[in-house]
Image (cartoon, rainbow, N blue to C red; front, side):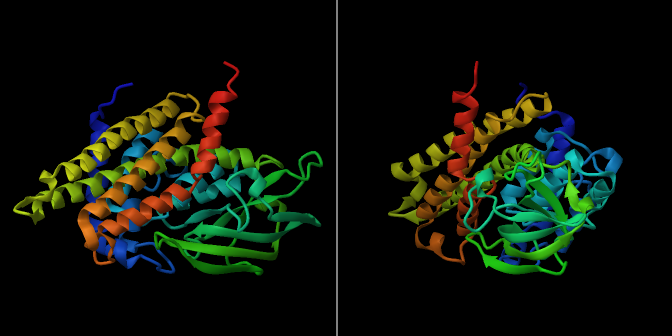
Length: 379
C-alpha cells in the first residue's frame, strides 16, 4: 500500500479543503446547531457544483464514481471543519443502497442526489433497539398488493430536509421467515408519518419518525424480499471507514487549535505547552492520530482493491472515534474553563466526537463485528 496521495488525490483534497474553508466556517457550524432543516444551502450548492455530492455515485447516474479512498480524503476535510451536511446519509448510505438493490425507477433518485436536488436519508435505529438486526421492530405488513408500515425510528438525520426516507422494517416475506428485514422508500410527507425533532449531543439535525399505518406499494420495497439487512450492512461498512476519516480530520484540527493555544497561553512566565504534562498530552494525541489515519486509509484502499471490509472498517471506526473523543477531552482540559463554555470552539469538536462515537455503529457493536471477523474466521 502506497501511503502517499497521487496528484489527482492531492487535487481532490485541495478542492475539498477550499470548499470547506469558504462554506463550512465555524459560524456556519454554529448557525446549523439544532436547526430544523440543518443543511447550509451555500455549502450544499458548492458540493454539488464541484461534483463532490456524486463522488460515490456511478457516472451513468450523474456521479463521479470515485473510490472509497478518495471519498475518505473528502471526509477528512469535512471533519476538519465539522461540515454540517447530509452527505453521508444521502450520498453514501442511501445512494449505496439504491445503487446495489434499487429498481430502475428507484435508481432514478441517484441523479437527483448527485445534483443536490434531492436528499434521501436512512431511518434505521429504533427507540428500544440496538445496532444489530435484533433491534428492528418496525413492521411492514401485507395489505393487498402493498404494505402498511407501523413503528418508530430515532436518530433519523436531516429527516425534515429529506425527499425520501429509506426505512428498515420486518416484512416476514422471505420464505415465510417472520424475521426477514426489508428496505422501503417512504415519502416523509405521506399520511401517517410524524416527525419530531430531537436535541442531540452534537446539536446536529436529528428526528424521531413515527409511522402509523403508512400505506406503501409493492414498488416501494428496495430489492428482493428478505435482503434488506444484508444490503444495509454492506453500505454501513463503507460508512464506517468514512466516519473514521471524519474523526481523523476533526481530531487533527482540534489538536492543531490546542497546540497553538498551548504555545500562546502564558502562565508562570512561560507558554503552558512548555510544561511536561501538557506536552505529553499533546504528544500522546498526535501519536494516536498518526496511527489512526494509516489504518483508515488502509481500510479504504483495501476496499478499492476488492478486499473485504468486515475486519478493517470496524477497527478503523473504533480506533479513530475513540482517539477523537479522548483527544478532544484532553484539549478541553488544556484550554481550561473556556474549553467547557459554548463561547469556545473546542467544545464543538468534543461534542461531535462523542456523538460520532455513538452513531453509525456504536463501540459495543463495533467490538462485536471485530470479534466475529477475527474469532469466527475459519482461517
